[in-house]
Amino acid sequence: MTVPASVLLVCLGNICRSPTAHAVMQSGLDERGWHHIDVDSAGTGDWHIGHAPDPRTQAAAAERGYDLSVLRARQIETEDFYRFDLILAMDEQNLVDMQVLQPAGSPAELALFLAPVSGFGSAVPDPYYGGEDGFQRVLNCVEAGVAGWLNRWEKGG
Ligand code: 4NP
Image 1 (cartoon, rainbow, N blue to C red):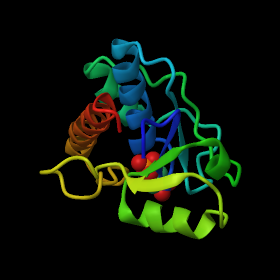
Image 2: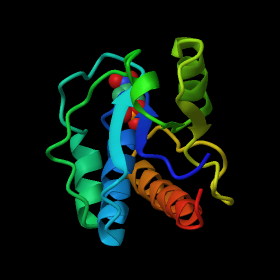
Image 3: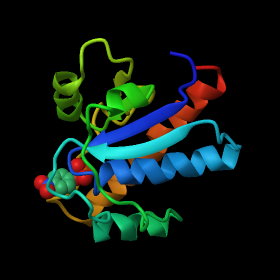
């Protein structure tokens, strides 16, 4: 793929990992002045539709300078597979769930968010039922993943 015009970041609940990735990617795009790339996030599940990001996620992200407070969870919908050039899954289950949902012939490319990065495994671990260290791990993975994609796009895709 060349540089995408639009990227959707997807996890299970859209209150921990994907909103973190959303804010970190938006921050990286803003720093570079790349206003031609649209970013959004969504969850495969419906439990948290309309909710702000988890307070633990917001607190951990705020410590690193990312404001997640304006984000609200939504569930991925069929239209997203036509609207977004690239849809990135936080873990393998998110990817499989989206492969099932993706309409045949829809143009979105699906990939794992950590695909361009080595040293972090393939999944951003779900922090929801764990301790504080899980939220730091999410941020470490997300910052590495975003840097990986931005580097790739800097080179033209
Ligand atoms: P996320 O974390 O997928 O990173 O937003 C989760 C949030 C909520 C739940 C699971 C994971 N939940 O089961 O409600």
